[in-house]
Length: 191
Image (cartoon, rainbow, N blue to C red):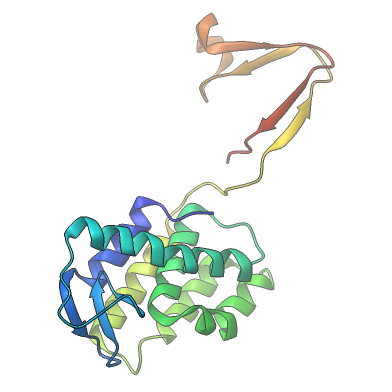
């Protein structure tokens, strides 16, 4: 999965934008929306577009981390919240967390998020309390599960609906004929 704009906006809202290097609370040289690493040098200046590009590049590591560590199907909102958490705390923290263990054990995901994310506030620091609350709210917001595509073989002649309303209310141009025995490849499974 990849982070959505809502997930990026959440990260941006808590990281803030700085176009010149600064030392974060962990005394790490940082620029843009929380970007760290060898590319950050004293005296450099970047544009807002460069900060956005750095964020997208940085976030890809955390997307990979969440994709590799969480073994249950996630909604887009759940994935975004976990990427924000990993971006802030690190993939290693997610890997070692009870949050991850409980999610992968199949416990109720919303309950796990509500109980576990709030534990990561470094003793109740106000900014981290707000961030974990925002991540929990996003995680628990309803959304459809993102599934792999499937192939469908029709066992009878029927119609696919192009809109999720009663077939009797759909005009003919919103129906697609399904032929007996035909295989439809790469169908997305929606909620």
